[in-house]
Length: 298
Ligand code: NAP
Image 1 (cartoon, rainbow, N blue to C red):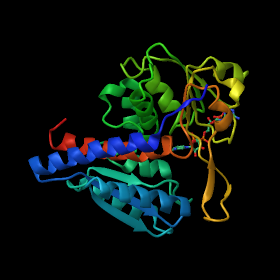
Image 2: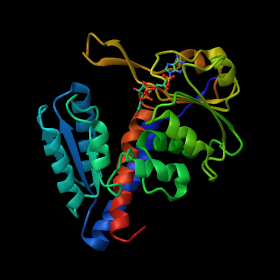
Image 3: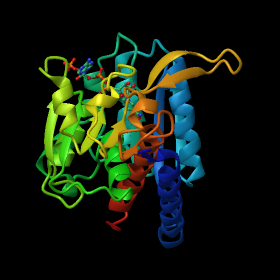
């Protein structure tokens, strides 16, 4: 068996085209477009490249994008005041503060300062709570888990009654995707197991999965013999394992031994080109939704 590739690159392009369409309709109806403020503190190379991609994508779908670069040594109070300014700006529908922040700034305070109605990363405790209560009613879902769910649903994979095993229990991926897949909802209704570093018999749990979602940050952690034949494998891991000497670019590997897993799984996401592009597409979707709420279209 050779698993079918679930292409996040292709699916995210479709989603971005849908968003662009909605933005054009919004402009025609209200004379407004969604506004996204992206705050980058310092010049961490990974953060600079993530923000550059987010800004480029926001502009490509027709958003009003404000890239607000701040110095590494910005006082915490000044950053909080900046967030407050965007909270009050009616033309800004989404605020994104690129993490991680320098050590002198309390990330929790920053996340809590963003209005839950503009929190397009969905990290604010109010949005985390809404997800827990009911995903279908949550205004924003966290971008990586929402991207994973879209990949599954748009690939026609049956989730109702499926055994889902999530490797990893982080606040940004493992816990929210587990919660989302267990919800009483047509895109979920799965039976979910969460495994982590203290789990006994990790391989045995993984072998039961109809849908195996891996977000551990350990290159090649999941071996082919851990995969149930025909299962869907979603590899969230992005691990920099070296540098390509010709291009100077990082060599990326997932948490799953892709070449070997492809011979066992039914469907599988590649790294890169799987979950990564979906995360940015879902950030755009959240910003669009935020503007649609404000304009009374949702
Ligand atoms: P994290 O905060 O480091 O959490 C990793 C989780 O995996 C922890 O719960 C940890 O268990 C578990 N884990 C680690 N090693 C394990 C092992 N050997 N066996 C079982 N469980 C293990 O990481 P994260 O932020 O969730 O990110 C995970 C990966 O996804 C990273 O490679 C990251 O770069 C990638 N990522 C990709 C995207 C994207 O858009 N593509 C977005 C976010 C993250 P404990 O809790 O017991 O420590």
